[in-house]
Image (cartoon, rainbow over all chains, first blue to last red; front, top):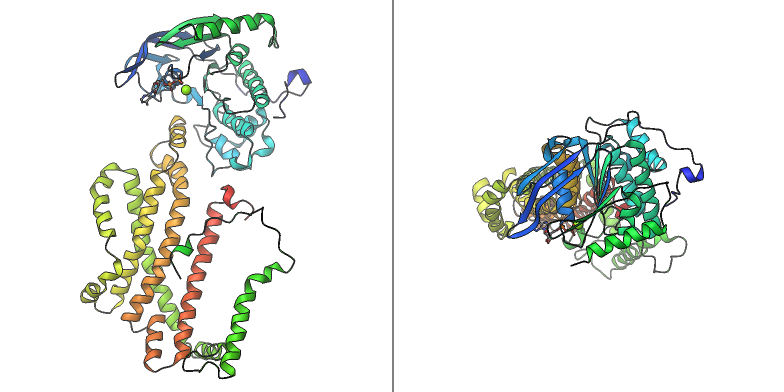
Length: 259
Length: 273
Ligand SMILES: Nc1ncnc2c1ncn2[C@@H]1O[C@H](COP(=O)(O)OP(=O)(O)O)[C@@H](O)[C@H]1O
Ligand SMILES: [Mg+2]
């Protein structure tokens, strides 16, 4: 919660990543996913460029989580393919990380131990400390998750996701359960980390303003496929609230509720 | 000791109740102390005859005397060893089967319905059969205690493993955990609170079974001590052995609680406990 826009307040920025990884590229071809007779995704095509920040919005139940889980390799397509950095999604392994609406921290592991789960090659106290510092949780390393606030828990989950410097970060409504103020600070933090680390990001959200504020491109999902897509060119760091963005937001909302 | 009172919910502060005055630490002992004093007076004044209920001071003197001869420790040690061995065998098998059936569908399909059927037989009903099988040797008592302890630990281990938060398991898999690592980092710690419930239930059954088994057929142990004393009408030894059972039960429960608090210190229910 005590997480104002870092640069704007002249707070010294946390240490840079030791090696800035490349964002990975995603190619989705002819993707279909059905549950029983219900066709949730139908012939969906989508490309995401390395380092791009893409948001997915759409009505509840339209298949946003299903799409994200397919990209994460947690689920397999009924038809078509998803490749992440040239590999089938389920083989992408440590190149991608996913964050859920719930922090999903292990209650019996300290904050630092939870972050260390993100390291594929065993614990590395320096990397963990660095990741915790980036999410402003350095002083909570030894705490139990139960001792953190909701926002702090999500920050710990973000540190766990990013400690291995993944090429792709998937976010499934990660801020949905947070209060409005905490959400704003988390949005800044995520955008900040993205700008600094250069990973590709896909954010699923029900908050169109959030999608517009964070991403380079917003797609509206519906009827099994992509209804519209909107590119957002950001001139400066804080265009939030401008008339231009408000117009974009209205356009996207219209697309969501068109049918 | 009843079985239900071993499963108290974790201690939490009831904030709505008014605070206690100073010296509160002594309050829980006030009633037992009063009972002891009244009991002593009733015995000393002849209100209650020694042949009905010996006085606390007489029981204490007997205890001291039996400690000096070493007889008390022999019986105590034998009973404690039986309890521990039965617990380790029955609890160990129960835990392993609970884990196996929680993790493997094949194992569960193969064994669970059989176990559920056997569970409906009160294990003490097997005493005549067990004596026929094992005579009155150690085997009979171990078998009964192990069988009694087995079920609560088996059932609660299975329940705990089946009810581990699936979201955490999905997280573990997404972070590349599988097999052994997933089990030890996510599944087992998640099942631990339930396993402790099973252990505490099991301890209650353990003492109960041991008392019955030792009273029916034994040549050593607290139950034997009580039965022999009854034959010779040595009432203070009878009462003493009952008190010792209570003390052992309390000790086991206290140790388990301490272990539980340590193992589950991450849980808000045990915070600052
Ligand atoms: N594992 C599953 N089994 C059956 N149906 C599912 C499963 N996962 C998702 N669905 C269905 O797919 C549809 C889209 O779900 P989801 O992707 O979670 O929507 P949302 O856009 O709200 O994230 C829903 O109708 C849901 O019922
Ligand atoms: Mg969803």
